[in-house]
Amino acid sequence: MDSFEQFIKYVKLDEEKRILISLQNHLETYLQDEKVKSMLKESAQSILKDDFIQLEIGKNICRITVKEGTEEKNLKLIEEELVKGIEMAMAFLIQMNNMNNN
Image 1 (spheres, helix red, strand yellow):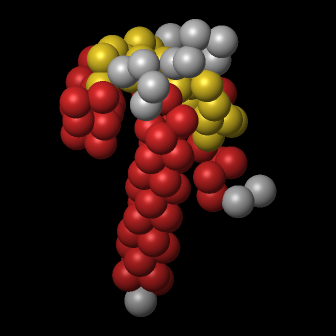
Image 2 (image 1 turned 30 degrees about the vertical axis):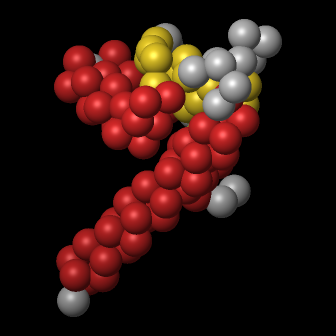
């Protein structure tokens, strides 16, 4: 399982053209934290800029509504940003682990 799949089940558009990001079950509790919710909304707004309309957070899923006609473009953008973020986090964890072992 690659590092993306350790955290994310899927990223796709639903029938209403909202971007769905489903997290692995072991991360559900993080989505209930108000600080995390606020951070996720700020991140989505920062990434999507004027295309961002709304973020809804469920048990283990985030639904992002974007301007009509921008769904596919923003789906790709969200996927790219998730991959970059996960790669950065994994590199940080590896570096911290290496520092602790030395």
